[in-house]
Image 1 (cartoon, rainbow, N blue to C red):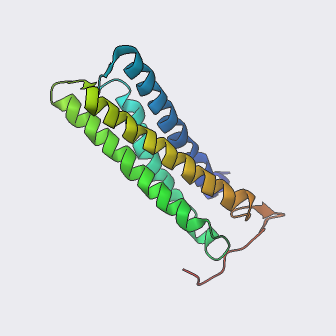
Image 2: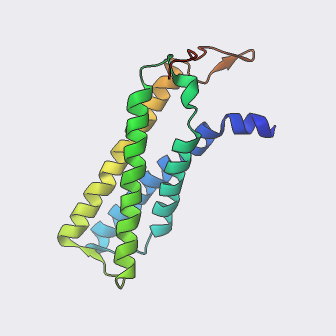
Image 3: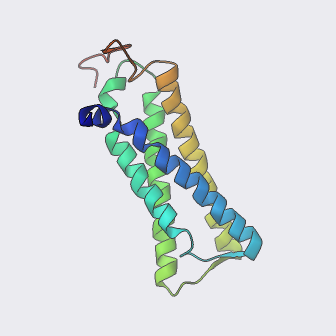
Length: 157
């Protein structure tokens, strides 16, 4: 059973950063609209988990399963990497604000922060779109009767 779960760890892990990034942005947006400012400590844990989850999702991606089978792997990987870096930047930005005395994001920094957070949502949704295309269009990682539907092309790295 453990082997079965480990073989499918990427599709299990990826849903956490997707949800956390979207919920984190929604949480920040609601607070920002309500208070016209944003405390960097509020919701920080969500963004930290999203960043860790994004990097874990990248690390667990079954890269070899997709080589030679799909044309969607390159945009999927590129968007995933950009997502992880942008979310990590958001975490660092919030931590710096927090360590500098819990100064709130207001006015221009608040708008810039929300714009970067919105970009992270677009990136993670784009990553998920291409991941879905790989599975549902090209059958990457899909097995029938224990055999891959579309086995990867060996040596096509």
